[in-house]
Length: 356
Image 1 (cartoon, rainbow, N blue to C red):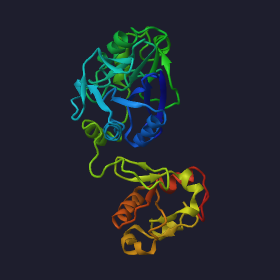
Image 2: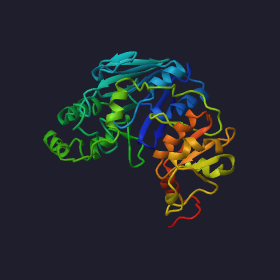
Image 3: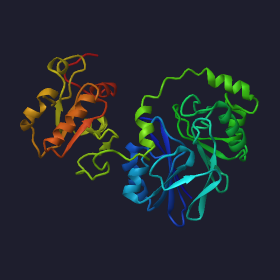
């Protein structure tokens, strides 16, 4: 079997690619919108046919890439019937199987984090994909999206811990760099759900977590109820290939600081901050041209339409709008610097002016 564990740094989400080695038929679990181009490239490079994208639950911290992948690769979308999402090709009930070539995954209902959580178990029970129901030495929160601590406790005990102890468990997220665990390990060492811990202890623990509201929930949940279908232009439209660009769900093409630092002479850098910021403590990127955002449309004629443009500001917010304005003015090769000068300085790249 072909198996790859992929990671989205922004949301700390794991995406899993599984394929039958003989038939090259594949499934992708929990794809991320901003990583759709990456996933397409991997599937094509490995010579696979993506049959299904699968969701472990209705995500509140990122938007799924399922719709984009269906548009690009012809894959079908499957998720829990309890989610009630529009646009899926298959609404799964517990114990249904998803086949890919000679291999298959069983979808086990494991509610508690949300009421539509599924754990996908490989046909030989050698691995399972638990989403946020069970994390490495932890579990998903139970205070949002019809969460229920008692339901999660029973889901883990009855539907995951019933798997062989050797079964490897792959989580939906990890914020510490941990990649995999096993049923046996979690039974012994999970501080919330180990077999020595009772249901009342677990419920009390989860009741007093005091976690902050997910920052992207108001965006992610409605989008995921539409299987990640974006509004506006086609989000996987081919670009000119002048840089490894990322397309955000907000509709912005972005370039990463590492790439820009290596290609400064190949692009026009337009800093859209105000003059006082341009000469302020954050400094400026060498060769950057100052054109404040409010003057950008009027001064767009100062820029070459042949050479790519990278827009820059303090955090990436104003420059995101600048990239939209420049595209509207007919510039085809435009990108926003992801994270702006704050991220550029955090990575300790060189600046002119500024202060430590």
